[in-house]
Every structure is written in C-alpha cells, then in structure tokens.
Length: 167
Image (cartoon, rainbow, N blue to C red; front, top):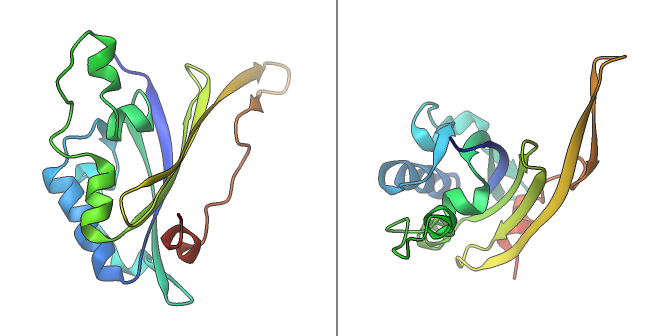
C-alpha cells in the first residue's frame, strides 16, 4: 500500500470560472492517485471559497494522495519503480493547468518516508519549481507532542498574483 502524502494547494487564475472549470476537468478526466478531497469528487467546488485578492483569484484545497505529489500528478514514478515504461497518465497535471490558464502552488508532506515537496506550476503549464527536502517527525512521549526537523517549516502560499506571474 502507498504511503499517504498530505497536500496543501493554491489554485490561482484571472477569474473564478477558470478555477471551477479546471477542478471539474481534473476530476472528470484526470487519472490521478488521490485518496480524498476535491479532485476525487468527495468535496464539491464551493464558489464562496474563492478568494479575490486584488483582482486575482485563488482557491485553496487540502487533500491526500498516494506516494507523493510528483508521483501522483506528474511523473511516472510508480510505474518506473516497478520496471514499466508506459506513461501513468493520459494527461499530466501541468497540462490541465495550461489548458485552463491556472497556476498552482503546492506543498506536500510525507512523514512516514520523511520528505516534503514544493511545486510551482505557471499558467503556461511550465513547472517553475520542483523541490523535495528531507523531513523527520519525532514523538515525545513525555508531553505527548510531535516535533518536526527539516522540511519547509510552515510555509505561506504565494499570493494569486505571484502564482500567475511565475516564470
């Protein structure tokens, strides 16, 4: 069974309708390795949650996927790991971004294996940033708490305008 990777994502566009169409297209035509969240249809798109920040629009989503963000949405990582060469997907996530003119920033965390990822995809579909760093979580029995070492900390997502202007 795949490890669960938690993803925090911001979808940015010049209008709210592009975000809605993007989410519907990904959900209806994507074959992504997602456990829960809006991309599986378990949650409905809520136009009331679209942020209008200085004329640029954003929709923030949180969900879980299998293995990692890049394996679940972009690379053929799982297939390659098992010696297969054929593509995993008919269409990749960045291609949906290009089709709808949306930009995406995503942070993911997989504490079971010990890494975090950061991705920035421009509305052109170009992957601007693709970064994976080590991270560990340790449990302290004395105070029943978790501490995290490494990773990105608690990063803030870029503004919708910054995502749309990414190059």
